[in-house]
Image 1: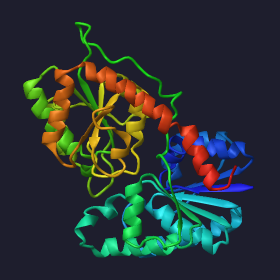
Image 2: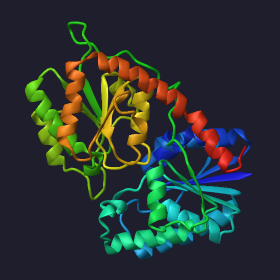
Image 3: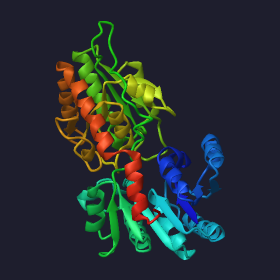
Image 4: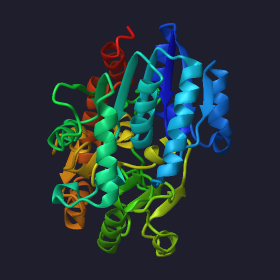
Length: 379
């Protein structure tokens, strides 16, 4: 039996879906993975091959829409899938879901599944009702592709409802909401909160994200500037990189934040655990997510969380229990929530413990993977 995963970013197949692939492999399935730009990710490519997986390159442009390039991608996918002859295909992120699902259908794959991990740039301002030509095209492609999926997985109920309201899913389409990608609670163990020179818990905030506007990076920097003016001992850490995305912040913005010491910039990390260990509160002011993996990792390590009352984010925080929910794009809300921790440091420990409990009970990667594998009839 052969299982094929189609991804737009090879590192995510290893880092976000690695445990799922491992569990499917343990069921006796031969694992096949398709992704673009393999030469850019030699380390991940080699690790996947060392696990006995088969990895194939596809001519996918991760961003932008070029009809000719996308037709070439579809043709390539159909040809490679026909050669592999998988029994099951799982595609995730926009282009793999659209073109991977269609290609699997055209190639006659018996079981075709789509995983919606987040909505991305194409769904910005979707509530306004206005549609650009690009958005209309993406929605039309989604609707056509998902007709040919046996089942569609979502990582939060808001995304599912939006797809239903926009009629991107047939009325009788089987759908499942899963608790994100899960987190390996054994790898992300609880770490003690950082201490200052006086042996008191250090108020240290952290954001890990691609440096995009819709991740709330600008709001985080603005809140940091306000807080540091009043509480200069507070620390603000930032981990991430400037991505090739229309909503990316500029290098000049980042350089300004670093130069005026608004944030302590770590760059891009392969292992985020040292940054989480150096923080006492995790912050993600994102405008919308599937289920944010970085929040789950911080929760597993016993960190309180400040995140937005937005789809995908709100599921991770019980307001006032393991952190605080703030308004989308609200710098004032961020500042107020940060001040709660500064003025009552005991909250960092108490809420961090609650975060770990939620991670164990709701987001353990093995529980999430069993749910998905059961729904895909792999166990």
